[in-house]
Image (cartoon, rainbow, N blue to C red):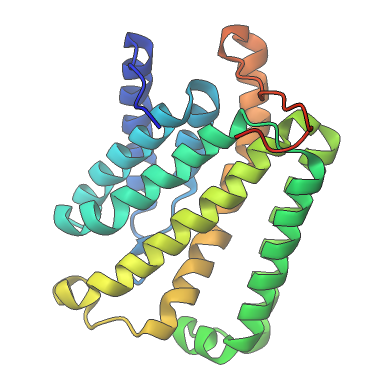
Length: 253
């Protein structure tokens, strides 16, 4: 895939999005889970990815999280290794898949697989989750299950009610899975190198709890971007980016 020429509008959008993402990310900087912050601010680059495309979304997410991490954690090297790449991938995929012709059947298949895998994993590793979070087994599983089911149910409703948004919903799920899993693995890999930050190396078994934390704290906000994007596109029709149609009615690569 070739990197497109960024227009002056794209550069302006990247500057604005990066600044907003960093600023709102700093506001919640005091809440984290083994160094991975609580980031409702992910709604901002998700909106820009849908409006301006994958490169604007990806670059904005990467720059914004880097600025946020420097101010909150003061560790640019850790951010460059474990924060910047996953953020770029997450928002790039949202913007890229948003314009692809992903049908409802494909969206529902992906969501069903994710619901099954996440709930099964939470049951199997429930003792590790509860030890890691300090919550009781019932409390953790209930909070996790409700968050996942409500978030992914919202995606299903959006995909059924507004079929043109099934591509965005799929991009949100796939981007969150790939970006979240990469971030969790990278944090585990580099934790021995940053003991002053993590306190101790993170055990391998905790990759999944870190991944779950990202899913339940970020995916709901990415989905909340849909009505905002719709309103912006209605006010500014030139920001419409329609899915490309496929002759087979499926995923258009």
